[in-house]
Amino acid sequence: MRASDWLSIGQLAERTGLSVSAIRFYETKGLVTPLRSPGGNRRFPRSDIRRLSFVMVAQQFGYSIYDIAATLESLPAGRAPTKRDWTRISRDFRKALDARIDALSAMRDRLDGCIGCGCLSLTSCALYNPKDRAARLGSGPRYVMGDDPLRPSSSKSNSESPSVSE
Image (cartoon, rainbow, N blue to C red; front, side, top):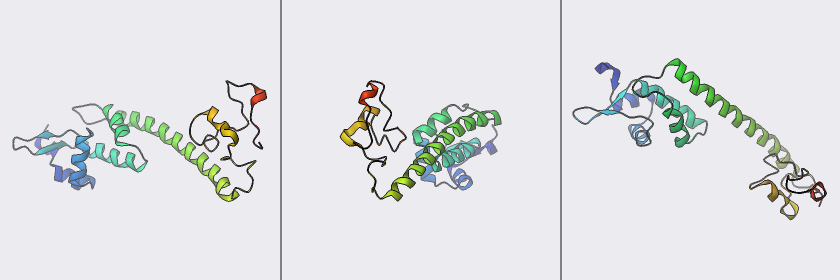
């Protein structure tokens, strides 16, 4: 690579809009791996502009550093990612985002009913859980997450299925 293909940490910060300390943090997490100059200064390949831009976008969508690092590990080492590399990552990223959007939309739609009801009707409230019957479906707010309070669990007979009005 030519010397012009490498950036100092300050140049990378200027190009990405990140602070130098943020870039150092991402380095400690393995998201970028600079080389050291003979004088000990960090030198980043220009391709790290795209990597760090991806990190910033992924964080805006709520991805953890761990998840981002796992995604970036699939990129080739020693060369700039190609359009094909980014397309593959984008496809996987899109699937995950679509699943999140669906889950968030469903949650929003359920909460609209919850917030508006004022808990005046415990027989139809998704949070109402007499005798902790939701426990058979797993942990967490099962009915709000979409489980049906009238659906019998696979380990119980239909005669044991709960009634919401109990």
